[in-house]
Image: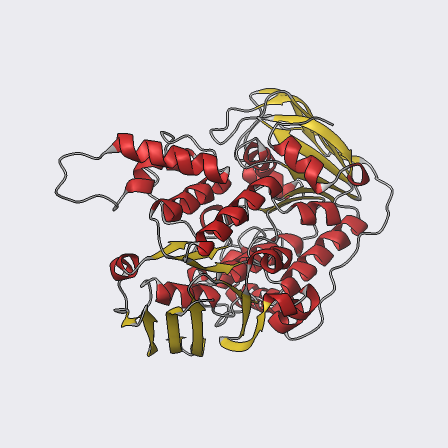
Length: 502
């Protein structure tokens, strides 16, 4: 490795009584990939937001190539050569992909944007990284996975010397991840450096040179990747040994959900003649690159859209109209992929979000319709403890939660109701190893109780570990539905790209 290009010294950040970063010191060498690991709420994203100028540290200093970085200035960070792919997107919904990527990259004195040059370079980057996307598409019409692609392209377009990648592979196929990592390695070989935040330990072991582990806001260890293994890193992250649960063999039960020639008019990848069945005691995994119909399927099960053609039956009842309340009443538990916009109301208190779907069913509403706050808050406190939602209490605003803890809140609200059908869309995205093991255990327990689970995930290891069957989506259709033992990740990855059939 070369000389240090980045030095963080004694960085401390507090939010009220919560110390998110506690005297953290880290360095990054020229030509190095540093992996930053830690459980949810450990302070990783906070630290990176300080580095990129979104937050100002209460104590400590940052140097880039020996020069002190002015605090609280993203512009200064960009000028210093720092590029960041945020875990939560920073895109303008009313602009196109191309406009988002080149926004802020041209002089304000230009009479017009040089869209031709931007389009050419964006096309080259898209092809190079396997991140195909329509440059003229409005970001507001894109799925969550497609938006993350735009974020990755923004950072690559900026040609930064220090790249911060926060969960960059969450929506990529194995082949696309291979391409991204190959390019990342090429970049650092030319003297650039990167910090990658990921909960996929096998990827960290592949791509990084060194691993730093945070726990409860402090650095608890650093180790060269060549001397690390998955079990060691998982234990460092959560402070205990972590073993993911294994699915036991179960016979499928009654038919809970059936789709017959279903079509939708969803903007984020419609369904085209979809046929599907889900049975009790079964986890049906859905594999596919974002934008190929997974979001439309999730919208159907959430009750936000109805089939435009074909037949959808839930527990023997045909669904003809969009009605989210009816779907909840019928026993559908929903874990949406976009936790910030469709999973919670950020301005509401944590306890309000936790009871929002069961006020009428669980006795939190009195005779005159008034909310029984004490009972609702007590229920919320129980769920916070059971699902290890790390927060300042049930009264805190939900928007203040880390991404992983926000996901835990959604899981607590959904799974605690013991629904008959569970829509689990990216349920472990952004979670640490301990939380992933817990979530997987909860899903398998629900399967054992008799629930049918639709598991939509871009993490193929998760699909292979939990699913009884896997359906591969491509352009709104199912290319194949096979028992999990008939698949491997390479075969799924090729089918996700439309390159092979079963």
